[in-house]
Amino acid sequence: MNKFSTLLTGIIAVFFVALININTNTTVGSLPHIQFEESQHDFGKIQQNGNGKFSFKFENTGKEPLIIQNVRSSCGCTVAKRPTAPILPGESSEIDVKYDTRRIGRFHKNITITSNADNKSVILHIKGEVIAKPKEEVPVKKVNKGFTPVAG
Image (tube, rainbow, N blue to C red; front, top):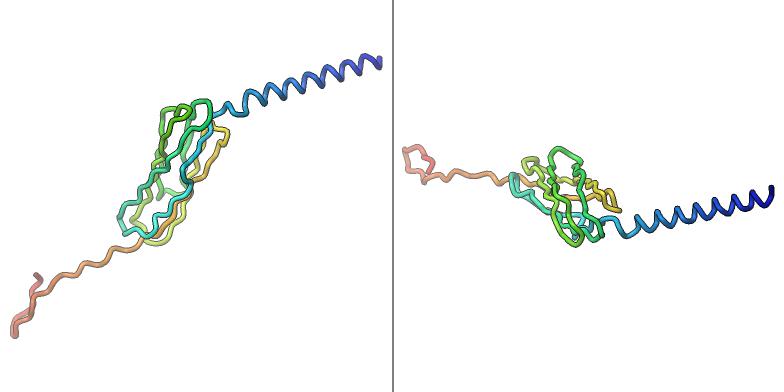
């Protein structure tokens, strides 16, 4: 009985070592990997109703096609668009982000990218400050004595 339990323990150990090696060999290095050129963008100061668009460029540096499954922003004031087609190994694409610049003030928003890559979830950041448009002044003609000024 003792020889049998030793043999059974040995077989189970060999099985688990083989299983670990199989899992390691099939997952490490064979999955897609999403690599962004930059993970944050500072718009600086943007004039109200100005251009709040930016494209985050990335590359699939893995060995399998990359599929962007979901792109979610931390606020309804930020809209992000993802590529719908798979990105093949070595190819590049972009995540387009648009911030609503009608709102005045500082902002810091996150965009969460979910994919089939080994780094399944990546968070991108945008920040900046929307400043009010300068008020337009109506030019006034010179006043002649006895007459009312007229806008020009």
